[in-house]
Image (tube, rainbow, N blue to C red; front, top):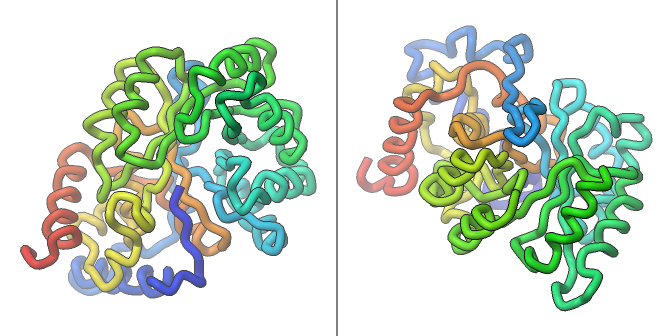
Length: 328
C-alpha cells in the first residue's frame, strides 16, 4: 500500500491537489469542466469481481500500514467515511502500525458494528522452520481484529509459502477464511510470485504496481489473468524505494491533458485510476490516516477509467515529463 501523511516533509497533499486543479483548469482552457470540478459522489461506484467466486469488490480499498493506537479517533472517522462512500476493503498485517494496526481496525469495526460490511484482509507472519508456522499468527489476528473469520488471508512477502500452504488450505476448508493468497511489494520477487501462482491454487495476489513501477504488468498480471487470480495492488502511489518514485515526484508537475477527460482533480486520483484500469486488477489499497485523503482516494473509484489508448498516453507522458523531465 502507499501511505500519505500530512507530516511527510517531502510534500504536502493539499499542495499537490491545488497544483493539479490549477493545471487541469489551464488545460481545459479557462476552468475545470463541471465533471471534474463537481463532486464525483454521484457517479457509479466501480466494482470488480473476484474470479474465484464472482463476488464484487469496490476497486478502491484502504491500507492500514500506519494505523496506530494514538490516532484511534481519526481512524474511526476514516473507516466510517470509507463505508459511507461505499468502500469495503481493508487490508492490514500483524506487523503494520508497529503491531497496532489489527487492534485498531478490530476496535473500530466493533464500535461501528461494521464487520459484516467489510472485506477484511490480513497476512500470516512467522518463522517457516516452526512446525506450527502461521497458526499462532492467524489466531492472534482473529483476536485483535475481533472476528471469527477473515475474508482474505495472505502469506506476507512470500515467506514460507510451502510451509504455510497446508494451514491455509485447512482454514479455507473449515470456513475460517474465504480466500487465500500471497503478497509482495518488491519487483525483485515477481518472478518467484509467478512460480508460486503456477504451483498453488491461489485466490489472490497482492503486488506492487503503479505507473512508475510497471514490472508487474509484464510478469505477474498476465499470469493472474490466465489463471483467474484476483489482484490487490499495493504501493499504487509509489513510496520510498518503491518503483523509484513517490508523490514528491509529481509535486509541481502539470497533469497530462487527458486528466480533464477522466474527471480527476489531482495526481493521486490519476495514479489510482491508472492502476485500477488494468484488466487484471481487482482493487487497490492506498493507505491513509486522514479523512480528506480517504475521500480523495475513494473518488478515483467512480466515473471514467482510462481505456487502453489512454493508458498508453499516460505512460508516455509519465516517462517524458515525470521519469525523464529533461526530455519534456
